[in-house]
Every structure is written in C-alpha cells, then in structure tokens.
Image (cartoon, rainbow, N blue to C red; front, top):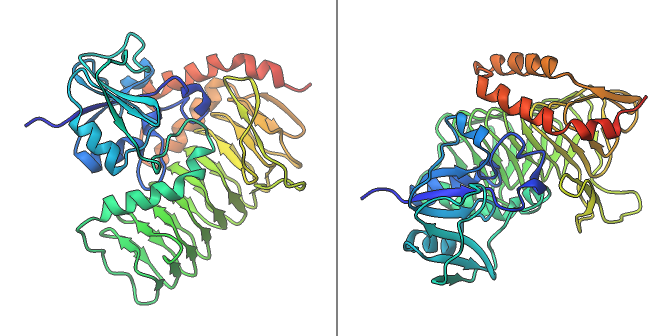
Length: 402
C-alpha cells in the first residue's frame, strides 16, 4: 500500500511569516523538535510535498506534487486527532478544524499552488483545542512548549534513551538521548519540560538546562550555557551564554556570552560575542513587531518578545537589539547603540546608518559560510537569495540613512 501523500500548502497568511519564509516553504519552519514536514513523516510515514514558491522546488528538500493528495495548510501542526483525520480523509472531502478549512483531498493542486484547492461540500469536522496554527512570527516561540511536548512523545514512543554520562545530573525522567549524544558534568532539569538530545549532539561541561529543550543532531551547547525552556536548538547549531524560550532553525551560531530571549533565528545566522536582545519593554507594555504585508508594526498581544532574524544574517560583537526587532535576510548588523526595530533584508550597518549589503558580497559570504559546513551554495540557493534581494529593494530605499 502506497504511503499517504500530503502537500503542505503555504497558505494565504504566508507573507506574515516573512522574513523566515523568504528562503523556505512554511512547511519547513521548525517548532518543537522537528520541522512541520518532519512532524508528518514521523506521525504517519507520509510522503510530504510542498505547495510553495516555484523557486524553492529547485532544492531537493522541497519536492512538488500536482496529483491526488491531501492538501494541508502547512502552518497547522498535526496532533493525534488531526493526523488521524488526515489519514482517514477520502478523495473529495474537506477537513474543517476550529471553523477553519485546513485540508482538502483533491485530485490536483490549486492554480495558485501555495493555496488550498477549492473546499468541497463533503466536510469532516475535527475539534481539538490543543492544536497549534502558525500564522505569525512570534507563534514559533509562543507555542514551542506545546509542540515540544507533542514531538517528544512521538519521537521517543516505544524507544529507550541512550545512556548519559554519570557526571551529569538529570532531574526527573523526561529525558531522551539519541545514539552518539553526549552530556558531561551538567545539570538537566526535566521536571519543567522534556529534554531531547539529537544524534551526535553535545552538552559540554557546566551547562544548566531547565527544560523543555530540543537539541538537534550535531548541535552543541558550549561550556557554561544557561538554557531556559521551552527552547529549540536546531541541527548543527552552536549555542553559549543565556537563552530563554527561543527557536534556532539550524546551522546558526550564538556561541558566546549574551542573552537571547523569546526569539527566532533562521538558518546560517551568527550572533557576535556579547550580543543581547531585550525581550521586555521598560514600561511593560505590549510589544509590536514588524509585519511585511502591512508595511508597518502590528500588535503581538505579548509582553515578552525579542528578536526575529532571517537566514544568512549576522551581527557584530556587543550588538544590542531592542524589544521586538525583526532583521531580514542577509543583513550585516554592527555598531554601538540600538539598531532600528526593523532592518530590511540585505541591510548593512546599524545605529549609525544603513546602506545596502550588495548581492554579490552577500552571496560570497554565504558561499564561504556554507563551505565551512561542507555544503555548497547551489544555483538554486543563489536564485532564491537574488529573488529576495529584488523583492525587498523598496524596503531598503525607505529606510536608508544619509
């Protein structure tokens, strides 16, 4: 019997997840232990495809499909109830959750492949108050705890953890280490949330972790790191200093002292030594965050909200990010003082002024950074970054300082 085919469709609110989805489909966002696509593979063994921008399909990680399948709104995370409903959906049926159409079993994709096919009259209704829908940037850290709990149960079901070194103290019994994971002379508290260590990950000496934590494959917590959950450190990241309720997609570094809180970092980011972000305003008011589709700041409903940084962005040592700052793709941020709360994609500079980070220089840096991890900046990667550069030109014109 062939595997269930699920197409994760970006959805109408895709633009509200920029800059994180400027370089990937919505279905490749990370929350909890895995990406949205990995959650479906783990739960159902499904063949997962992406309904997204055509440029992304040039990357092997984001295959397309235009045939019979369950077309699912990518930002709706699977729960037991939703996954079962998706598996049991029949051709011509529509799935409704919380009065929202979230899936259609259709013969082919919609004319706009990032949107769901036309809903049908034959509807299956599922009620699940625990399910999470990702439509805004801050949802990734806001709901990370719930998704980490769900993923921990799925990832570890029926399995036995690899042993932890006797020099490490584990409080509670919600700990799981994949083969090759190491933890030395550290304190791991799982009474406040599960702690999951991916394959060949490493917790170096003197770390203090207050769960939940998901540490991805080959990721490293450097000596003396202080981690407050729920936090996700994706594959191949290097993290030190103090981190609270944050999500790092993967292959990004915050390797030194400094605070990162209520934050989301994309891929290939680097945070300079001594960098801090504020996650709480001095007057304790609600934080606003830049919205690409609005072209202005929008209310988050949150008192705690820190930094969101797009792929391939970097900041120099001792950078200070104010509460609710959004940094676009391929930015280079540096200088004394607080940069603006929104730095457009391909910005160069900081509080003393901004100019454009030229596309050629940005691509050259990306190539060097990826080569250090034995990965190539392919023509497909170049095309995606070039498209982001072109699409965001007006934003840079509006914020460039003399």
